[in-house]
Amino acid sequence: MHQKSVDTAPAMAERLRIIAKVGRRLIPFLFILYIINYLDRINIGFAALSMNKDLGLSATAFGFASTIFYIGYVACEVPSNLLMVRYGARVWLARILVSWGIASAATMLVFDSSSLYLARFLVGVMEAGFVPGVLLYLSYWFPASHRARANAFLMMAQPVAMAVGSGVSGLILENAHGLFAVQGWRWLFLLEGLPAVPLGIMAYFYLSDRPEKAKWLTPAEADTLNGMLAAEKPAARATDSLSVWKQLADKNIVMLSLAYFCLVNTINVNATWIPTIVRSVLQSHTFSYVGLVTAIPAIVTLVLMPLWGVSSDRKQERCWHAVAALALAAIGWQLVIFAPQPEFRLLGLVCTTAGAFCAMSVFWTLPQTLLSEAARPAGIAVISAVGLMGSASSPSVIGYLRDLTGNFSAGLLYSTVLLVISMVLVVIVAKRRSAPSAYPAPVAELGK
Image (cartoon, rainbow, N blue to C red; front, side, top):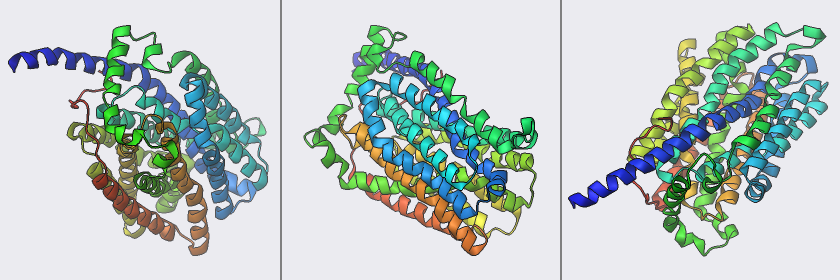
């Protein structure tokens, strides 16, 4: 018995060293890509502070401009993930970045609501598949016992983009306005869209499709990593005999898709409407001040997300980590609606932002344990696509309810109800699924 523990301790240390090496190589670069990706989601919310007036857009029309982005995205998401499997992440992620960067920067040229709708639709088509593609890519490199941490470290890019992008966007709107006789919101689309192009070129040379193709891993390291990933496959053998379509139609996958739809609604409300909500709470029209205050929820989220991911991996517990985070987000919306003091309403935004992003980082550990390797690309893309229908619908719904009632309360109650539904669905799926871990999950920082 003693000899066995001596033999396995060095092997465990070696596995952790390899995972840490992979984390140091991939996470920082993917993190930067994710920041640029999320900047493209939130910059239209800041552009709206002056763009809507210049183009004569109502809240409903602006909401539809956000919605049509997701229509293009959802339509192309599953094909994009399947093409990534065919051509490899190195080629396909590079293609996505370059094409969406060009389309996003070109949004500066819009001149009315119709041209804005067309531009946002094209950005959605070009950007389609980036997030599910990256999530699929992580599953090629990190075993399930470390995936919540990997997801959390990667998805921290979203609140970073909110924190940094909020301040930068506000400064661009104020200081670039009128430069070369161009409005500030046009500069915003140009300056925050173009960085995706050089990063896409870098991705082609920097990324490796699989461990066995990575020149920065030794053959022994690649074999060990592939062994860890292969050891997870027995958990999926019950589904291996089923076709991909039958796996996608499984009740658990359907319920997770609906749960993600409900969660993504809140993520999108944050991305699209939080600058307007903050300005409404503060009764301030100074763009830079709104940007700085908008960054506060994102900063708190940055602290909480890695702690949440480590806790979930250490305990190998997913359900209640996701449910507790969803509950925190729901409580936050109630504070935004009903709290009398601005300070408590801003606290509500902090709770909602932190809760939603923590829930998302844990959520993506669930579907990967229910799908065979053959079904995983399509499964992740389908769940993401259904979730993004929440992003497609929420801007229009929230915009319509705001135009109808004159405030955000009805729309935020709608978001709260969806979060409660998501909690219920996650609990149901968690009680039905069985996901044994091939390896124990000692706490190991990805960057160490």
